[in-house]
Each structure stands twice: as structure tokens, then as C-alpha cells.
Image (cartoon, rainbow, N blue to C red; front, top):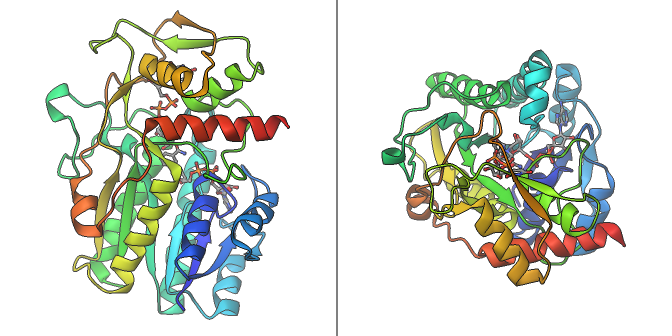
Length: 340
Ligand code: NAD
Ligand code: WQD
């Protein structure tokens, strides 16, 4: 049984991925310092899978501690690096903290892999590496060059990819960077989902919190974009579909099917959906229309971005299972559980 290290395994996408890994028969070890999560997520995973997760409560920026885990575990067959700070507005206020945490944790992990002499790496990247795209570049594929990003957070993803791309030149281990678009929704059991962090500002948690009455009203940031209803277009993708793609990418590396030492994949549904369409879908599926108003554009927002995920479909055999209805239904079930 292959042994997989999940860095940031108590987080939103990490915890969903651990479930998929366990269901596919992998042995999982997790590292987290709970800077944006809680260890109770391991209990939730246990409720769903029946498995206890061996975990180390350390900061991945502490190299000696990372090395100790790798030594104690005698290395890993695969490593999935989710650990990062991920708030775009916070990164604008604290850029150095973002550069330090996101890059140092990745460098330490890569060094520990080299030191242990085995393992492949999967890195959580983001569609933010594409920056602001022209409409004729959509749907965006991996062959589109990355460009200057909109935030320090996005820059940590671009730096992370580039560090790994250069590191791959010495062929020490193989890497896949997965560029997520907008992961949303929650596990189908209703027992696991995104935990609201302070100052949450992503659309779906804002929608569910407004529907739940935690927020009075939400603001749609702009209805004067050049889109079918004037609001921004994004590519929302179910977190369990994202989780499943990690297992497929891992298999691709473990079976040595990837020739390159570094490669990238988009993970999106391929469908561009407007903010107003998200609200309409949420209302149709869950029977509640969250109260909203139209406000000004949000600084730094791009008008439109959606994915060409053909490469992941073709090479990894990835197929999305969940549509926007299911994303909205599961997000709302999870919000209701948080209230109960
Ligand atoms: P999350 O905050 O829920 O999970 C990240 C986890 O990493 C948390 O549990 C956090 O405590 C841990 N962590 C952070 N720094 C650490 C450190 N130094 N040492 C140990 N643990 C540390 O975020 P998520 O939504 O699950 O995102 C996972 C990854 O995917 C991140 O790299 C994020 O940038 C990337 N990503 C997320 C989205 C999204 O919308 N959620 C989109 C694109 C990319
Ligand atoms: C989605 C749409 C908003 C809140 C961010 C990061 C990106 C990636 C995913 C990590 C936009 C609109 C939102 C609200 C609104 N994360 N909106 N009212 O900005 O596409 O992407 O998360 O890598 O890197 O930048 O996601 O959920 O914040 O916004 O109208 O109260 O919803 O304008 O069009 P975004 P989001």
C-alpha cells in the first residue's frame, strides 16, 4: 500500500482529498498546524471513512521538524502539498507573511523529499497564475503563458510553480502542479465542508451565510461587466471532484506514466457561470434566495475566467461527477450542519 503525506490535510481541500485517498486504499499521513483549520476535521474524516489519520501537528516552515517526520516515516511514496495561506485580501495586507509561509513550507517539503530519496509531489496551484485574460484566451488551457498576477497570494502560486519547474531540471523527483479554479461545495455525507475562517469573502460561503441569516445581505460585485447578465463569470468545481483529481494525478506519477519531471493541469468544470446564475441556482435547488444587492466592482476581480480541462480529462482520465446544483445543495447542507 502506497503511503501518502498530505500537507495541510486538516484544511478544506486536504480533508476531502484524504477521504478519496482512503477510499482508494492509500495509507495517509497528515501534517498541519491548524493556522486555518481545526484538528476536529480528522474526527469528521474518521466518521466518514472509519479510519484514524496519523498526523503531525507541526509548522511546515520548521525544516528540522519536517525532516524529523520524513525520517520517522522513512519517507513517502507521494506527497500532496496543500498547505498555504489563501486569503487574497489578507495577502495584500501581509505580503511577506504569505511569501514566507507559502514558499518556505514548499521549499522545506521539497528538500525533505530529496533528502529521503523517494516520493513524487503534487502542488496546489491556482488559476490565479493566468492573471487577467482576454476573452479570446478563454477557455484557458495550460498552454496559455502565465503572467503577472493580481495579488501576493497569486504570486506565491506562480513562485511555487516556478521553483518546482526549475527544481525539476535536476530530476530529483517528479511534480504535478494542479491549477484549481473555484472549488466549492461539501462532502456528500454532509459531515465535512469548508470551515468559515475570519473575514471570509469567497462567494459560496457568503451566499450560504446570508441564506442562514448570519449575514443580512450580500453584495454582487458589479453588474456592468461585459457578460450575459453583467456579473463576473467563474468556473465553480465541486471539492470532491478536485479531491478525486489528486488521486488520479498521484496514480499517474506512481505508475510512472508522466515523462516530464514537471507538468501542470487545470482543474475546472469548463463551464463559466455568472454570480447571478449562482444565486438563481442556489435558490432553485435549496428554495431560499439569499438577500442581495448590486454593488460596485471589487478591486482586482477579473471579468471572466473558465477552464479548458481537456488535458486532465485526457491524460489523467478525470471526469467531473458533480454539477452546479450539487455544489449548491451540498454547500447548503454543510452550512445547516454548522448551525445545528
Ligand atoms: P485551507 O486553508 O482550508 O487549507 C490549508 C491548510 O494548510 C490548513 O489546514 C492550514 O492550517 C494548513 N497550513 C497552512 N500553512 C501551514 C504551515 N506552515 N504548516 C502546516 N500547515 C499549514 O485551504 P484550502 O481551500 O483547502 O486550499 C488548499 C490549497 O489549495 C492551498 O494551497 C490553496 O492556496 C490552494 N487553492 C485553494 C483554492 C480555494 O478556493 N479553496 C483555489 C485555488 C487554490
Ligand atoms: C467569485 C465571484 C466575485 C463575493 C478567489 C481567488 C482565487 C481562488 C479562488 C485560491 C467573483 C463575486 C464574491 C461576494 C460577489 N483561490 N463575489 N460577492 O475571486 O474568483 O477567486 O478564490 O487560489 O485565486 O482569487 O473567488 O469566491 O471570491 O469570487 O459578487 O460577496 O463572486 O466578484 O466574481 P475569486 P470569489
